[in-house]
Each structure stands twice: as C-alpha cells, then as structure tokens.
Amino acid sequence: MSSGISPYPWALASEMRSPSDRQPAKGTVVSINRLRPYQREVARAILDSVFSKKGLTFSVEIARQGGKNELSAQLELLLLTLYMLEPQNLVKCSPTFKPQTVISMTRLKDRLNDAGFGGIWTSELGYIIRLGNARSIFLSADESANVVGNTAHLLLEIDEAQDVSKEKYSKEFKPMGATTNVTTVHYGTTWDDTTLLEEIKQTNLELERKDRIRRHFRYDWQEVARYNPDYRAYVEAERERLGEKHPLFLTQYCLLPIHGGGGFLSRQQRAQLQGEHPRRHQPEADRIYVAGLDLAGEVEAEDPRTRPRQDSTVVTIGELDFSVCDQLQKQPRLKLVEHYRWTGVKHSELYARLVDILKAVWRCRKVVVDATGIGQPVFSFLRGALGARVSGFTFTAQSKSELGFNLLATINSGRLKMYAADGSAEYQEFWVEMERARSQYRSNQTMNFYVDPGQGHDDFLMSLALLVEATARYSPRGARGSHQKD
Image (cartoon, rainbow, N blue to C red; front, top):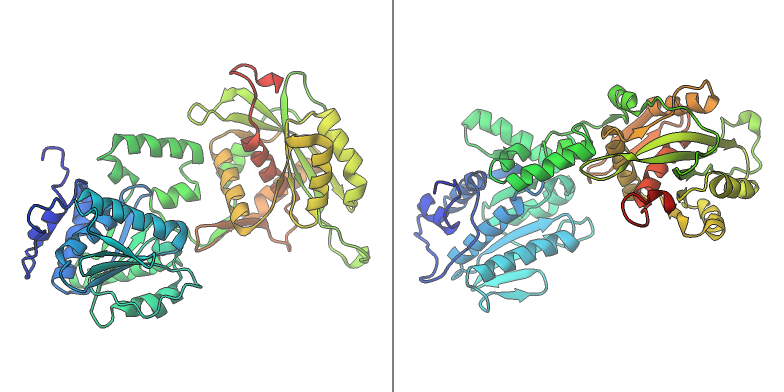
C-alpha cells in the first residue's frame, strides 16, 4: 500500500509462518482496523516469540495516544482467533480495574465485533472474554487485587507498566507464565528511573547488546505524527500549553524519563516568572482580579522562643489580562499585583480583613481557598460572605500533583508574571521560596512540590498555585469582549 498502512493484522500471523499453520476461520473477517508500520514492527516481534515459544520479555514505549492500546487489542484478537479451538489463556493486567482494565476489555469486545465475532464471543465473571475455548483474562494490578492462581499460556501483558508495583509484578504476575514460558509485554510511557517499565527496559537493552535480539521498542510523538497529521497538531498544541520542558510533556510524548526530584523551578522558569509591571495596592477600574489563599497552621500554647518561624497565611492577588490571550488555549495572562501576609494571627481574627480585602477592595471574581483540615471553617465562612465566587481546594497527593503541574504549565507558557522588584519583604520571601522549592516525582506519575521545612516555608508558593487554580476556575460571563462585566 502506498500509504504505508499494513494489511489486516491477521496477515502478520502468516508472515511469521507459524509451525501450526494457524489461520482464521474461513470467511471470517478478523479486523477492519489497520496497524501503522511501527505497530506492525512490535507485533511481528511479539508473534514470533509466541509462535516459536521463545518466552521473550518485551518493553514497548509509545507516546501517549500513539496506539499502544490498539496494538494490544489487535494482538489479543489475533491470538484468540488462532487458538479458539484450544483451552489457552492470555492475561492482561492494568494498574486499576476501573477505568483502565474496563477500557481494555471494551476495546477487545469492539474489535471482536468488528471482526465478525458478535454473538460468538462471551463474557465470564466480569473480567474474562472467551472466544471458543480461548480466553483473555483481564486483571487489576492494584496492590489489594487478588490475582494469584491464573495461568498465562499465550501472552502476558502489563499495561501502563510504569504504574505497576515491581513487587506485585514479581510475586503475582510473572509466575503466571512460569510453566508455559510465556511471552511477556510491558507497555507504557516513561516516568522516572525507578519504575517497573524502566527496569525492564534497561534489562532488555543490556540483553540486546549481548545477543542482538530486539526486545525494547520506543516510538516518541514525532514517530507517531509521521502517520497522523491530526496527532501532530494536537501534540504541538500540548507543547505550547505545557512547555517543552514540562515533566508531563517530556515523559508522555518525548518518552524521556525524569530522574528522582530536584528543583521545582529551573533558573529559566524563574526568569520567565519575573515580570516588569509594578505592584499595586488597590485595583484599577475595569480590571478582573482573582485570588489564592493559603492558610497557616494554628499552633496553640507553644513557646515562641523554641519554635521556628511560624507558617503564614498568604493571599496572592492576580489580574487577568485578556488582551494578551494565549492563541491556542484562549487563556489570559495572569499578573501578580499584590501580596498580603499574616504570621501568628489566628484564622478567626482574619475573617473581617479577608472579606474586606477580597470583596470590598479587590472585588475578586474568583477566590480559591485552602480548605484542607483546619482550613475548612475559613472556607465555609468566606463562602457564606462572598458566595459562589469562593471555591475550596482540598490538598491530597493527587490534587496537589495536578496543582503543581498546572502551575508549571502556566509558567512555561509565559502567561504568569510576578510584579517588578519593590524592595518589600513579600517580594523577597516570594523569590526565596521559588528558588528553594523542590519537586519529588512518584512512581504513579504524580509529584509533590514543596520547600524543605529545614530551609523555610512554602506559603507564597502554595498561594501562587491556588491563584493559578482560581484563574482556571474563572469563567467570564457574556460574549467575547464583555469580560469586564462579570
């Protein structure tokens, strides 16, 4: 084919010249979906190992939305078809049952229907798909999932292997193919250098150097984009939105692993964050303002002489500038214009001041408040006083990770700017925290960002992140050009 697109996937089986000469049933259309050249390259290697009973272990890195799940489904369809007269299993696990395992099952069902097996395949126990005597067993790799006792005869697939526990895999999934010398495939994208996928990848690369048998396959977004112009446009827009050095862009699309942790903001990012506009102590007419409020912890009856500097409650005020709007994402520029900080002041004593600042002075259109733990009463009070313009944010490992990624994306895109130097204590503390902020990347593709308590506090950092969240939650009313009239 001149387009470079492969013929039907079952033709791959005949290319491998299986010893058993297996072919789809006469008259059966195995698939109407076609594989791209890079998918076929992986499929050939996997099928050769399956048919020749080599028992190889593969690692397959394909950029996000690049077709690894389709490749997996087509392999499952093919093997179920070829072995439908035999009691043979293939096993696939995903980090979670819902939604990941369910999505994989749905895709295989769709491909079976496309291939003309509608009304022939059956579902068992909610996690098994049977075609004749062959079965595809879908399992969760969650730590609490009970999966021991299953056997993989044809293929063992580990989806999103970068998110699967090494211990879970080694103790419960890998033994499923011990008696059958099963071929194993680890699919995913990169994250850091501690994941299961990275470990398998490095082992495979070492084996390749010794025996020249290819076991690791890597296709970044540019390879995928060669065959899909729409995908190229999408990823280029993501690069513009996130920034090409954003951890998610580097790992999900460039397939470049990050290494542990380190500084949260690079020198380049801090330079991007620095603005030239002056700090303001009162609003300008016809401007839109939002705010992020990070609350200090309250410590009672503690000797201040033996206590390090307390956390502060920090309010960061930002101005939304729709005249400088991101062309792809239609997001406004966010200019920091004012900071308020209180140290050692009880939350109850701040209520009146917070309402006056946020409502009377700045007339903020959206305020996001730290509503975690002791912050809940403050959020409830402000919500009652200011109404729906106030939103609460509860810090969890997942939500804080998303907050950090969004902050990085906003900085990388050039949409977030700090006011110019004014010699104030707030200005100095802000930049101290930006410089000392650290990041820690976790194996489940989340991160933590913070200032080490031994080096100071992160009140301004968290208030800034909540300000960015307030910007994301602000929705102008009316048509374009009427932003000034909430």
